[in-house]
Length: 338
Figure (spheres, rainbow, N blue to C red):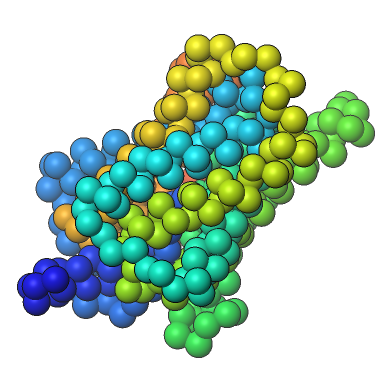
């Protein structure tokens, strides 16, 4: 690799590292020192790409809702990561990315596959069997809150300051508003599921947060290679889970709509979303990518209400607003502008 290419690559990795600590789901995290200023003004193309990315990630909740009609959770998640891994490995080969041979590296990739794909994807999909896609997206927007908390506990270099602690606290107040209290007339079983399903999505956000901290060891690895490795590792782990729990060979042939939804969540909401994410990172910087965290629930809600006939309670919308305020406080740019 030429010297100027090495420098460019290091800058990309540095920005990517700080972005994963504040951004949305399903991104293979890194952590290195920051060498380039964040928060630069975005041009029209960057805004368009950011909106498209929010639709792709928000669309994952939409596609999941459709695919769950025919496919059980583990089988759906397996299809998602397996197809995405094939696409990502194709990109790795096209870009001639060096592939490590160290078994320790691939062991760490397997842990990342569990923390950043297998566990959160499965929890979110199971949660969506009992709650609306828009509500799942709202709860998943808490990922930056958990990432900051876990980094504060597990590292010596990423401690919460007063502003970020206040933002985290506000965000968790929003979570309480979203979950709210169950209706008095619901049955005990319905009452339990109405509590467990949101908690499953919150556990997924915690898993993403753990991945965000654990993934700092991949600071010198190509993000595309990390993404390809993670999806491959999680695919291998999901094969026995899907076989034992779902027995997919007994399932009826999925409908064309379900097949299209699976292809959508794998090719668009996973593989293409990774690639687009990295391109925005190079163009606009890490801090601007926090904006996608605000836009994902909006995209998911619009898709769910517009195409799936879902409805959200006022407490869900209000809670989303409170979580958004918490994220804005963490970001800090609005406060510094006033």
